[in-house]
Length: 308
Image (cartoon, rainbow, N blue to C red; front, side):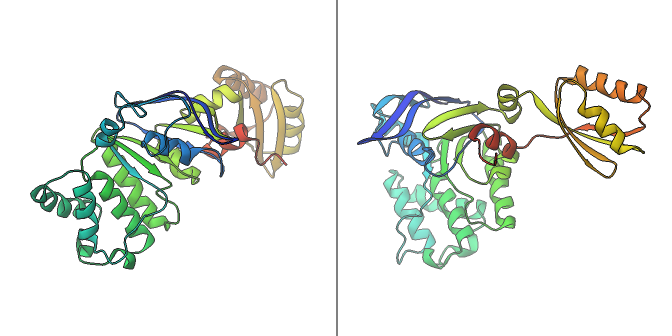
């Protein structure tokens, strides 16, 4: 549904996005993460046809963003990280204005707007002024605006930024429901746990370059074979830690009481062999469990942050 080939954007001497090649499958949620200045917002703006690429190509729904921008805009709903103008507009007036911009007729707008407000939980705010809404309500209104023309693709820049935990849960549920309806969603965020739970795939950008892309598991497999094992022994944890530290494939062992955190390189067969060897050595193992790797692990690994 979304495909880029060596997509590049330069601002005079600054290269904001460099040779970006990625693919977002139809009906999935793809998360773009990275530190400030990584090029995420510039990438989304190019895909939404708000910035023209300096080089390379970007295809959205089969249409080229540079040569067929009008076609792209018909199938894309874009929500920037800043809300835009809303002075002295009521919620319904705000949506009515954007509906007219999308070329929707008056009757179609009158029918669609109440349904969307109901969907995003703002039906009781229809006559409220936009500036009076909370941050979370404005984000939901922004999503309603994106959905006005029933686009196949949603491009959302930091939509959960500044939201309280309860509102983030609601927002995440709405995005999952939209994906289940077949919409393709590209979302940028600094809230890494949100993306780990929400997205089918992620891409990590650093300095304008995509350094990793795929599922969390796929990225981890590419960048490192190291896994963290949680091991608990009934007694002699100190002896178990010393024994483990001498084993091949183990780079670090940390002990807290009977609990051992072991950095281990190897697959499932290697883990089974390690457990068998521990039992044969006489250690009474109560727990032997690979730890789930999180999106934070991936981000820190590929960006080098948190290494010192």
